Structures are given as C-alpha cells and as structure tokens.
Image (cartoon, rainbow, N blue to C red; front, side):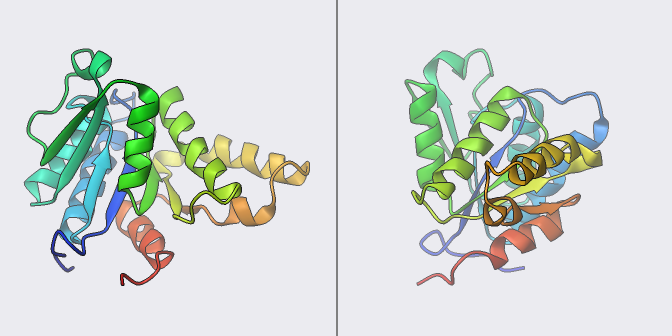
Length: 192
C-alpha cells in the first residue's frame, strides 16, 4: 500500500466506542483498522480519547506510522483521557464543534462497534448525505455481527418508505478492516 504525502493524504473518520465492549474481537478489529489505514497512507480522524476502541484504533495507526487527528471537547478531555500522543489533538468546546470538525476533516467515515455517541455520529453523516450536504462515503465495520440488528432496522425503515434504497445501499459493509477500507476508498473520487 502507498504512503501519501500530507498534501494528498486521504482522511477517514472512525466512529467507535470509548469502551472496549465485552467481545475481545472489537478491540482487535480497532487495532486492525488503525494499521490498515496507516499502511494505506490514510490519515485517521477520531474522537481524541486514549481509552476504549478509540484509543486502540489511534494507537495502532500511530505504531504503523500513520497520521492521527483527534478531536475532543474540553469537558471530555479528562473524562475520556485525551490522547496526547496523536499527530494533532484539537480540543474544542462542544460536542457540536467536535462532530463538525471531524466531518470537515474527513473524506469518508467508518463506524465500528460503539454506543449512543457512535450511532449519533454515524446517523448525522448519513442524514447530511441524504439531504445533500456532502457526498462522502460511509461504511460499517460489522465485527462479530455487531451491526446486524441496526442493518435490519435500516432495511425496515426503507421497506416502510421512510428511507430511499439508494441511501441504505450506499453504506459499505464488511466484517474486516481491509475489505471495508477498500470498499470505502473505491467510492471516493480520484484526488485532484
């Protein structure tokens, strides 16, 4: 895989939990995703914490030589233990500023297992795409079937006429980091 210069580097925002979850495969997948991104020359944008899956994906990207941008609200910097070892750590005042900074910095989005915050971030980028505010691809890293209930719910929303099929079917889905990153990258326009 290539290593892009900072000027041409692509950035993928990863949404994931500030906890590890109960299945060790979640943390393993976070490490794998961070490594895959770094080896592909893709910068990581994430929530700025050094704990949970967030810390695992950032640490793996850093160990593999990748660039990592963390964005964390001041109020969470101590609670989630801000990661001081990332390439760049932006401390913002609010969650709204955090989400906007992450969206603006990223060329694409991947959601890993996580909680309410992960789903909020994922659905915000899906909604913004639906209403035409961006055209950035999104994917789900479906570790151990974590996202199967959510996918069933999204299909139900589609079947009930609340979401167009094009908005559901555009979400890349894989159970491993490398094929998911490949799918997401394939949906990006060529860099200018």
